[in-house]
Length: 439
View (cartoon, rainbow, N blue to C red):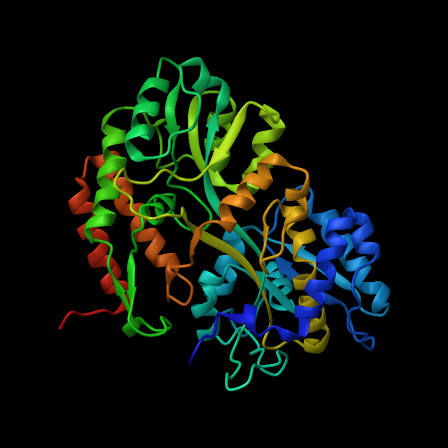
């Protein structure tokens, strides 16, 4: 079964809407833009449309409610109910087939959703579990290009380097580090009693924190010989020289004592707290974390920039691994027409939605927040000028692959395993997980 992921070019149904909406976003604020929201499909009354998502943020609930109300102005008999779950809970329930007889109320509620908002890295398992409705009947396909798409991109995110401006200036640095040598130098100078140069965590939602460093180095962890949708076409390449070099660099920082301790158990919230409290001068985090940092540090005490790359990096553009939130229709939904109408609507409102969750639009439009916010404008400019990687979309069992990496890095940090051995361990276990054989 072919997974077709380049749906930006074939979402012709919503393309005109998106172009029209762009001028609205530039001219009006959030509420005004919703008041002038583009027409949605007018649908007959059926039942409440249930949307399951993992956007857990203080601003999300009200923003989603406002979007739903704007949609209802065009469809007064279509009610929208949002159910929010943690990223981990969504992953658990979407990647493992639910039993035919469900007794757990949380699972029942989840299984009754009409729309799933999910990480597209889960797509392979979701298709294998027959979770999603194919969108070929809903998306107008381009000539000579069959439509076999499964979901629509709503928002995008990247991981960036956060740095404490005040602390850097206090030790003589007027700008953030650009390459590995500078990063190590900065981290060593920043480290002092009660403070470390860098805070790093192996505990995370989504992919391990080592991945942004690997991508920034221009390296890849997988080779794809086909369309990357089944194990035979995805070849593990974690032990390639560029990835091992990245592990060597991280290990050198560990050996230099510049990384805040307890990396194996440290949560994302603890990592951010170490940074915002001044206990660490730098960290890698998502653009969605800008608001959490800003609430504690204000607008002028920290900055953001690209993840440092190797000194001999030959690329002309920074490289980011992109995380997306996609929306798809549950295969057994009784309200598929309404679900598609609301997904199309959300895709057209992607700049406003991205603004609400502090992310980037999934459809390429300029986010609302970049208009008058210097930090988000910098992030958007970096994103626009970058090479963007989505290495694990369509790869099966990504959760298992991520777990292998975290386990091996735990051995590197806690048990003194050397980087070469770490890379070989990951390579071997990835080959086993993906059913790959060299013979």
